[in-house]
Length: 112
Image (cartoon, rainbow, N blue to C red):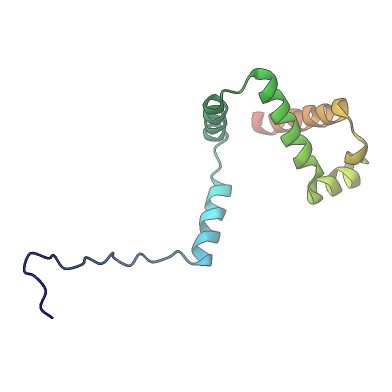
């Protein structure tokens, strides 16, 4: 059967090469090595603003994020081994004290 002359041939999409697992791993490695805390802060502030979070909601979110990070396996083990801190037994004040100590250590590190 003959096609009408005014019909345009179907255009095919160019084949985009999918990144390999190695390329993804290299990208992740690059992101980790070049992390920019100022850019991350800007991103978080944009998200908080986009969602219209109040200061108390931001405080709760950041606290729960820190608490979750402290409960991750490697962090939990490091705090137990090096500082004899049982993360499971910490309440709000305990988590905030650990966060304060980690922040102080970070500030000392970047000041050098």
